[in-house]
Structure formats: structure tokens, C-alpha cells
Image 1: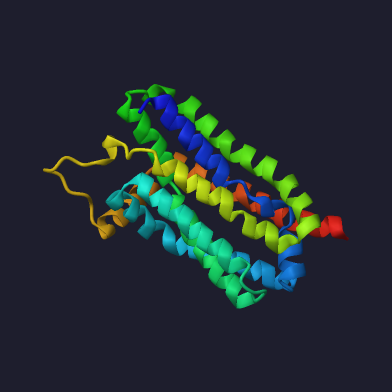
Image 2: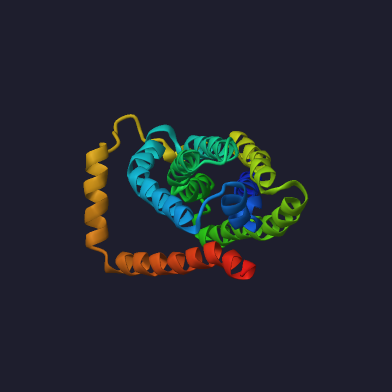
Length: 243
């Protein structure tokens, strides 16, 4: 398969998995249909963050074991399960289960998607183009968010917020299908005479790398604050608009 075809499949998959129709109906879904208070909603988000933290390292090890592509596909399928749990019944505890599935999906895809892109470039000896390719990859993500939110808002006013959330099963399934036709990069396969690090060894080496690289710590701090501000905007702008 040509590199351009592989990249288009990856871009399309990223666009579809971030086709978050619920972006325009987040607060109406949780506080209207779900009947949650804002405190309960923020508790759910804290639970989601904790689950992501809990799952991040084990799922990274999984990607090394079964391959980047397979890990990302599984993460998308788990995302679908999370969506289904969201609309089963308006209950705080069912939402907790849904958030755990969504967090597991996010942790599985974290890093694995970028590694899939880079390993694909290595297969075709096009690593020098990585900055351009990753820029397009990120834009696929952003286009998905930008286009889906107003569509979800309109559909929510017609059908109701819960149906908008359930509709996301369609783009998520298509995202998984895109990667199903993508071959696993050869660069992700170790030679037969080499073995992968154990789970403990990967944790220790990762922590040592983080401690000894000041620029990585700065980037981490920068990312944490940017995402904190983004979180506040995402979850409170609709509340402010309602008032």
C-alpha cells in the first residue's frame, strides 16, 4: 500500500474518532437528560482523569505487545462501548462506568496513534516529513471537533441530546474500519533475537527519562496548564451561556 493511501486512512480515522457530536450538547445531556448537578458532573470528570492516569502505563505496554494499529482499533471499539453506556439510563453510577470506558479508550490511544504515524513513515523512509505529517494529523483531529459540534447542537435541538450522543457510534465505527484496512508497520516488530522490556522495566526507564530531561518537564507543565484552561472553557462556557 502506498504511503499516501496509508496516511489518508489515518487522517480520516482521526477525523472520525473526534467527530464529537456531543460537543454542542454536553451540558444539556448531563444536566438535562442525565439529571446531574454541576458538582456531580465535575466529580465525573475527576473520576475520568483518575482512570486515565490509572490506565496510561499498562495500556502503553499493551501497544508494545500487540502493535500500535491493533491497540488503537481496540481503543475505538471500547469508546463505542462507553457511548452505549452513556445512553443506557440517566444515572450517575452508569455515567461512572461510561467514563471509565472512555478513559480506557483515551489511555489506549494515547501515544499509540502518534507511534503508528511515525512507524508508518519509517517503513517508507520518510521520517523527515514527520513535522508536516503530524501537523496534518492534528488538523484532522481539530476539523472533526469543529465540524461536529454545530451539527450535534442542531441535531440535539431536533431529536434530543441523548440521541446525539448515541449517533457517535457511527463515526467511531467508521474510524475503526479505516484502521482495519491499514497494515501494521514493520518497524514496530522487534527482531527475533531481541525481547521487549518488562512492564516494571518500562515504568522505571520512563520515569528516569522524565527526571533527567528538563525540557520534557517544561513541556509537560505547559501541556497541563493549557489543558486545564481548555477544560474550564469546554465545561463552563455552556453554563455561562445558559445564565
